[in-house]
Length: 420
Image (cartoon, rainbow, N blue to C red):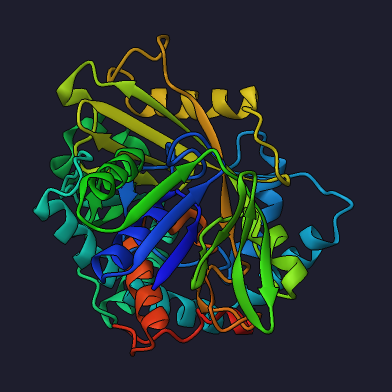
């Protein structure tokens, strides 16, 4: 079967890789001149399989006012005259309850554990060199109340297969000595030894290179924008691009934010909205002054991941529409927070490789994976929010199973695009 995959970020590339290995002829299409130019370019670097609890949690609505009033807070909101923005917010608020959050967490954990196994398999096979490290993850808590809440979440996830341990302040510093400078603001932390880290952009480039040199029938066509999906007699016939029509037996849409506009004429609802994030990457100057364990500061919502000889710092969630501009004040906040945490990790006055990107979130946090109701040979694999890097390989396996008409490797309740 000839499958046309739209989007060459981590979701599209893992989909193309998985389908090619199953024997399909694959054409991978992207409007950018290189792979991983969108949300996959410089994300947080953490493969956080046990940290997939949705943003739409039961306590979030009560925290939002405080975040918005804090100029350095993790959330920024710019209201727009956009019905889609307000509709998304309404659906998000409806999902902010304990029952929905627990159900979503269980579903995402199943997908994340599948993805963990498949990502580690790719790393072991040497398909791509991407600075993969079995680093573990430590989530820092600022006070006793936050620590108790984290322990409750840990207990819930333990029933679902997560292996985590609660550490006090001294144990956190013993595990990651570079935290000594900020030990006074740590009440404790949750350590997950099984988490990984890696450079998502390098992973994407490595997969693309592997596909290009493999014996599989794969064509990677970059710099071509998908303009329209052609449907005739109830089936998808192909896609109109800048270079004409590309015909295919099936089409898989892995476009993130771009999926909404492309699928609208076909009647497929795609409840995705961007949450803008920021990152910076700097060379590590002192090995002992930068964390080796992946660290998340739960108070500031900033993550730190060691990527070989560099440190990746990422954070922020700006609900401001599609705005690709690098907001200097937000970036300055991220730099200041990172510098205060790890002042001697690198040259904070030197080149920091700043980046901002649009993460495609659904209101519940569940991605859309499977057949579209718009046509029997149209499929979606999109809406992974900030978890695209973590969930990519598992999502590709689920999608490939759906396309082949076989049972997926895990239960997929909640991922069906028809329910969007």
